[in-house]
Length: 235
Image (cartoon, rainbow, N blue to C red; front, top):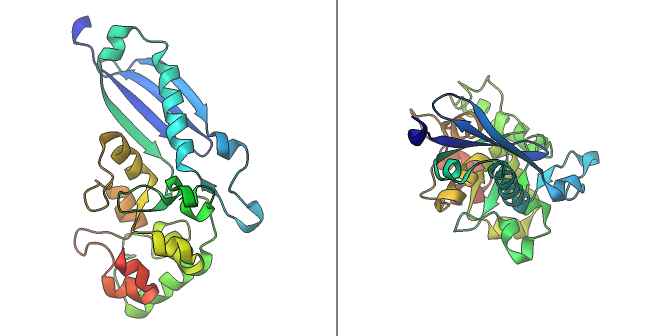
């Protein structure tokens, strides 16, 4: 039995840190843990509490994930590390970012490295209240079913509100953006080498609950997105 043991690493991206947990897939035993705080977030960068703006740099996620995993693996034997067979990801959401054609968040481009609007927009960012009102008004006016499984009201914390706010208020980012991606989908895409917007796998929770996707109608129609802002349809 010992030689057949397999382990998985669970990665939880919270508001302040990335946590790694190594688990025995057969017994459920917790083998090792590691925690790494986001360095830029911890320094208070890119946020403006007065205006409810909370942004996180993609490098915070990459660096903290790497460190947390290294800490956890330092407590394992070599044969245990060699028996790790999978990664599992959990993130807060909706936490989207606008990306280039390669699916990379725009903050990874040198010209936008310090631009908050090019970073991930944290779940608790409430800069898009007006845009959420705009979305709700349009859906109600057209009597659409998009909110049928959403509780009837679209939130300023969700992806369309946040993306719409950025392209409404930042011309440079609007012009550079090719697509958007949720944090949870970008992390899995990043580690598997599949971040291309047309090819990346997107989780049903993020697409359904946050982006109003449903199997019976897909994403909101191009006509609806265009009425909100033509740039949305182009994405």
